[in-house]
Image 1 (cartoon, rainbow, N blue to C red):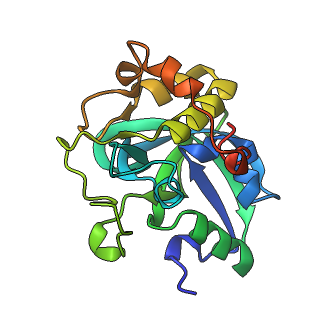
Image 2 (cartoon, rainbow, N blue to C red):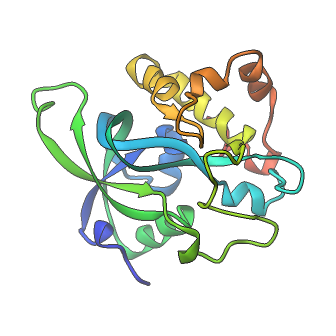
Length: 221
């Protein structure tokens, strides 16, 4: 198993910005995680800019009939920041393999973060983050035109089941984290905020969607 440098240490800080904002979801991969809290990641942009590989592979999001296929990713962007969750994990090879399988397709790298609250909130440290990769580093699944290669004008939109899960998870946290998720998360055009996308009844439609029973725990917020 080839392990990214960011995951090579025995103990690391994971930065979670999408589905893993849910502590319950994070514990599906890292049952013994500790110190789950909120932090701010700077110099990176959070956006719905990639295909959701799991949902498309399971037929829940069908690229032949919709552009509502997107999962979250992050990319370096000067002047941007967002609130994420952070937690510490002690890694062994089994946990590394589980994490890499769950986050298949991403580039696992490091990003700077600061504590959102506390005495050391001015100190920057590095955490492990799942960043946007490129299609030339992947085998693009049949039926998908792109994983990461979506242009700003492509019309790619968040996958409903995934977006509902993220909204449920961030709604439980509330406060600054929820505000950041709505205002600091962009669509693939890098202009439209998630808050704007959810206007005009879109939030209500998304929240009415239910995942298949087999995915209820994974996508239950």
